[in-house]
Length: 292
Image 1 (tube, rainbow, N blue to C red):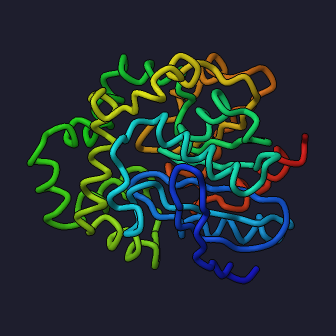
Image 2 (cartoon, rainbow, N blue to C red):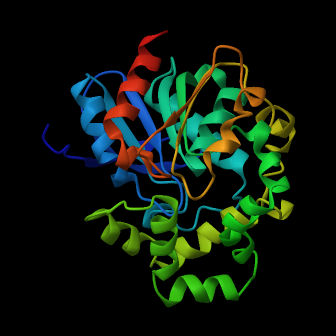
Image 3 (cartoon, one colour):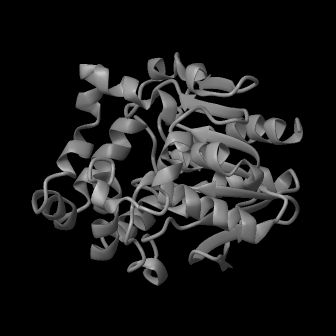
């Protein structure tokens, strides 16, 4: 299978114009990345999806491209999910299939809860559903694995660590997906998270987990919906060797999911399972999309 060739497009929405990478033709699958990641790492997965007759669109998160660098006034999870719903509406009024990894997983789950008409079928990677995330904060070992979240709350210190070099980025990749060689994706990720504007925006996203001044007040009414189990089924995938959120934290995932959802733990994969097991992720996702 040949490498997919992405072209950069702009998805114009009623919220913001989103630069994105696109490939293929057919029903659209929108792939949302997380941290510390780049839309181009969806390329191995996109190869399989394009071969299966799908069009893949992988947008840059708000604030992660020079064109949107100054557009992250609010940085909460509902804001990002509203972006995903708007992109879906712009691409297909009947809704699109979505795959979300890491931060993107929360986006897809929240779209499923608050904007289900924008989602045909959804797949989340590496992060449990929002309704069960509180369980992470009762496990001391997991709290230790999330050290970077606490570091990112320290104004000045976090900026200095991220601006100094990409050592923290490399450390997260190596511990979250042990043994994974990112190849030429490393350079892309380093360039993205070497940009001071991206660093500032990433920190705003993580600080919005605790700082309500970074929450969009116009979307606050949706919080009771977005943080509860979605009203439509989702496919939840995780890596057995994930060093960020370990596999046992998906044991209770069904409690935060609609009946008919599925949870699969993939062997031979860590946090970046779309790079480590793209064939398996594509097969499971395509089966999920085709089951409608």
